[in-house]
Image (cartoon, rainbow, N blue to C red):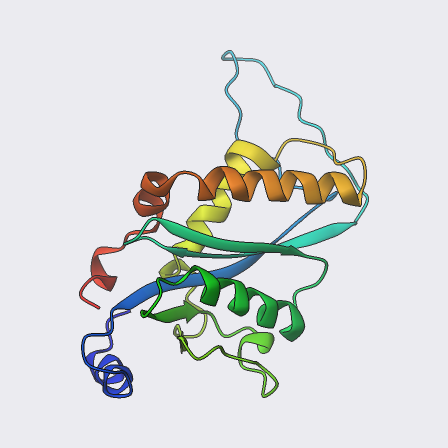
Length: 190
């Protein structure tokens, strides 16, 4: 989101000439109680899709920098402050040396925790409340579900982890796709 006053304040804390990378962060639950997505089928037929009623799940913590085509992600057993701390450390390692990351994220409880450990090369900027459509990572989750994660039954927790890691690694290996899914006109100009 364009917020010139906030960006100016962030830039004032940085050394002159430090590049600012804009990152978007979110998390998604993936598990045995999975989503069913649209499927191509001959007109007049109803294609079957597997549906599981078990509830084992994991969370993909994902962040993208569309301008650089970069991604940083972790698959975690829970969505909490400890998991976000690990994810922020992962993002910090992915930021270009000497650059500073502005990480846009929603206002989940663990995003605003007083025990959050934000690395020195990251500044967090919360998105407005109740506005998930502003975060392009929501579109990343839809893409990953449509292509790699939905319409399947996971056999075990390890199977969930394997599929989540493979899906994230597939996405991370496609910088042009990250830029295509994640670029927002209204967010440019940082």
